[in-house]
Length: 138
Image 1 (cartoon, rainbow, N blue to C red):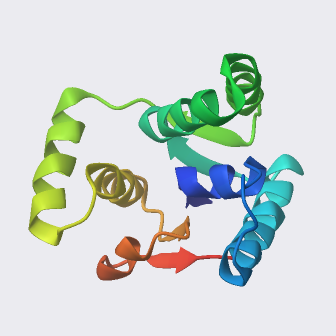
Image 2: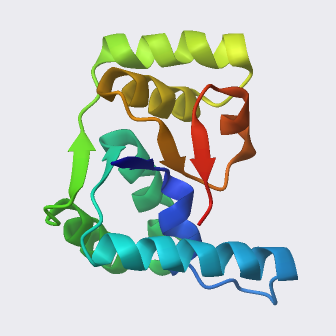
Image 3: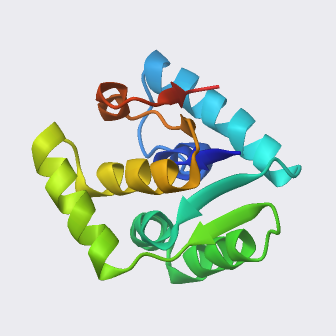
């Protein structure tokens, strides 16, 4: 099982408003491949916080209806485990974020991975490269 970062969902489903660079096209294509595997049943894990990030962005770019339908689809997939986050864990992620100079939610993903003994994350965020985990982009 791998952790899936919010940016994988966003790169896979959001259509750019302007012509994307070649780099963005490549990232989007890899995100779509990951997303397709998840839709076919690959088991992944994420947090309610990361899913909330996806919802917030989708509401802005595609509207509440699309965002809520997407989130409902993710929540009802048996192969996607959604982890609830308590204040103690979020506090620990805030401290780790300061120590490693990464975002709080990146630190949160790492802490959940460590708790669950997960060693790989699907993400296009290079901040994960400073942590002792393997970031997968394909």
